[in-house]
Length: 125
Image (cartoon, rainbow, N blue to C red; front, side):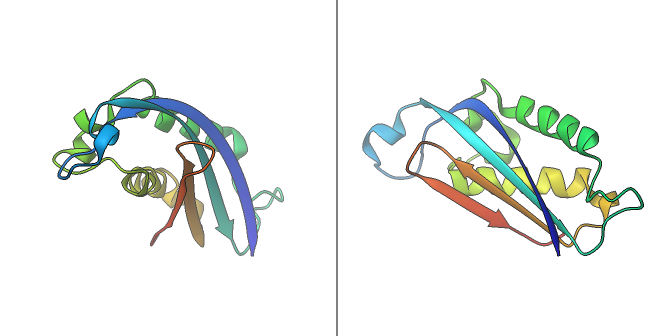
């Protein structure tokens, strides 16, 4: 199995709803760090897992959706907490759709919201 990891950083804001989480209930920023890991069983005819130029374009476009935004106002987070777990799932699903033509065997998204807290989601393709 081959794996390729790429990363990006973006800034976004959020606040938690549905319970009393103190300061987390007040809108606040995070400097997120995103890592995307793609897996496949075989390389293409050029010896690549995927076209890295295409992948970088997708990374730029996906992170632009969240850059500088308040996550709570975006459709995937309507009436739910925009936790890093949900953010990882939403980003995974965006890449799953964008990279469907690549024949991937695995796709994982890891997000750090600070130097301590991170989550990872690996879902079905």
